[in-house]
Image 1 (tube, rainbow, N blue to C red):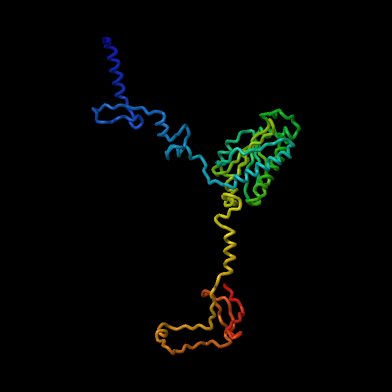
Image 2 (tube, rainbow, N blue to C red):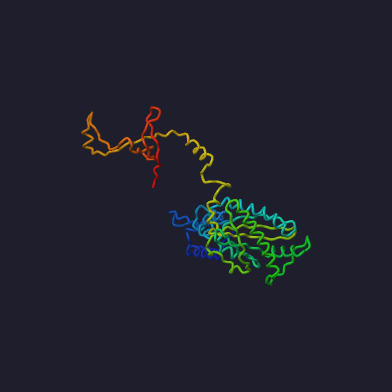
Length: 359
C-alpha cells in the first residue's frame, strides 16, 4: 500500500532540483555526461585514486606520475646530478678510518656509520641545519675550494662530556639557550682536525689532497662557501659512543670536486676509461717484430706529362747524381736517413750517415 505524499514535500523537492539545475558545474572535473539524451546530464564525482592520477601523485608521493606537469613543478626544487661511484668508496674508507682515529682520540668505544649520501642545493642545506650547531669551514688546498663540516649539538656535548671525563652510561647533559664556551669550541676543533686528517687519507689513493681547517662558525650565514643555488654532495654520518653520540654532516660542493670529477666517475679503483694496459704492452712488443719495407732513392727528377708521354724504349733520362752523392733512405714514403752507396761482400750496400729530423 503506497504512503500518501505531502504536497509541501513535493514543492520542496522540486525547488531543490531547480536549484541544482541552475548551479554552474565544471564538466572537466566532474566528468558530466553530455550525450544527446534529452539534454539531461548525469554527473559523476571522481574518487581519490582518479584525483591522485590526475595530479600525478602515487601512494601519496609526488613525482611518480607519468610525466605530469604538476609533478614536474613539485620536483623542480630537487637536485639530480650524476652519480659518483668512487666518492662512495672514499666515504666508506672515511668511516673505517674515523672509527679507529676517534677511538684513539676519545679513549672510548666509538662506532661510526654512514647514513646516506645525497645531492642538495647549498641554500636548502643551510636552511635545514638544526640549531644550535657548529659549522667548520675547511679548504681543499690542491683543489682551491672549500667544504663544510657540521656537528650537531648532541655530538658536541657528547664529545665534551667524553673528553672531560663524564661517566659512562649516562647521556650528556644539554644546556640550551647559551653560546658555546671557548673550551667546547677548542675540543670540537680538535675533533674536526682528526676528521679532516682522515678525509685527506681517504682521498689519497685517488688524488692527494690536503684539507686545511679554516674557521669554526655557529651561525650558518657566516659559513657560506657557495651560492645558494649551487649543488653539493652531502654525506650524513652517525657517531655513537655507548649511550652518547650525535650526527656529523660533510658537505662538498660539486665545484670543489670538479678537479677530480673524472676520477670519481670511475666504477672501480684504477679504471682508465677503456684503456687496457696489458693489451697496450702486448701491442708495443709485437710492433718490434713487424716487417717494414725500406727503399733507397739515389736521385729524383721532375718531368712534365708531355715529356713522359713522349718516352720510348731507349730514351735516356739524365740524372745529376754521382757515385759519391748522398742517398735518401725511405719507409712508406717518409724520408728517415741519409747515406752513401757502396759495396760489401759482393752486394750493393748503403752506409747510413745521419738521421733526417722532422720539423
